[in-house]
Image (cartoon, rainbow, N blue to C red; front, side, top):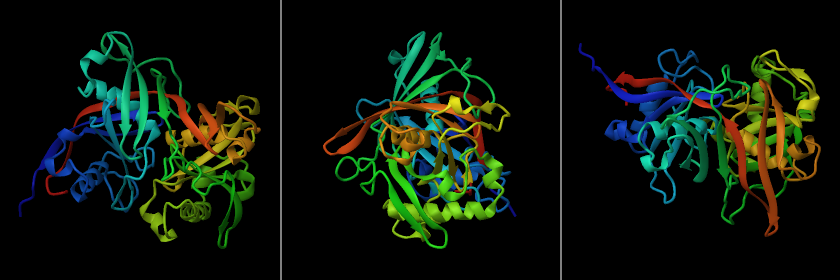
Length: 395
């Protein structure tokens, strides 16, 4: 019996923020995988090593966490005044699907670097030294993101002294601007899909909770930590080692998604793991982060813990950080209240690995809140480059 050989596809393995994933130029993919459809999804599943009933992704490039089961597809932009089109695929670990419903804010930090190094940016726009401004069209959410990538001697500068909690080693700082991060909706401003900054969410057999539903960066459900029995200072194992807690969060997420209008029925949640996110907030409190470093209550404006793909994130998703910064800027949201209330243009929040600062400017016009821009700093670097290999009959 004969078996087909493996094929190889040019790829780059990159860290961006607190995530890492496999980056491709669309033109390098096999022709039948260059467009949306089963072939593309099956290829990416095989590259990452999914679906894996063992939950380890041993036979692929994934590392069995929501932060590492990721793929990025890039090409020269088809949108005027943009440089690169960025499509993100969150690969399920134990199920056979790729979730295209949202962006990865962390990997966004690596998009500009990859685009510059792989010929997707016109050479005339790359300085010999300084910052290269890369205009990214985020295809999943149809939004503009600006990355400011440091350049030294005409090449991307990856090394540096910028430290990001949740990432082991320092690297060069990349500032990211998320323009008009709120969902546009039919009326041009459905940042709060229910029309309220705080709602009551009823979840059968679990309880009734105050919640802020916001669609900025990524659809997110915010709860008060105290309302669900937490302090807001929990680390990963406090949540992820408790299957009852994880099931509770997933049920709350499903009912919240229906209330946000993202699903018509809670049964759809199993096939929509990437969005919405669910997070809980609390006022400042001193705790010891997962690295052993103390986070003092005076260091932060509030505490936030967020779940991604059914597990507590080891730090914070970049898109969720946009949601946090946006919600913090708007008086009356649970995030804003946890941070002390009032109007603010930036917050520093505590997460399991340390702290993160994110800025956002909110204005109230046309009888609704709008946020023009959210800003944060990340870092990125190439971990490995060359080719990935998959069996020729796997997609």
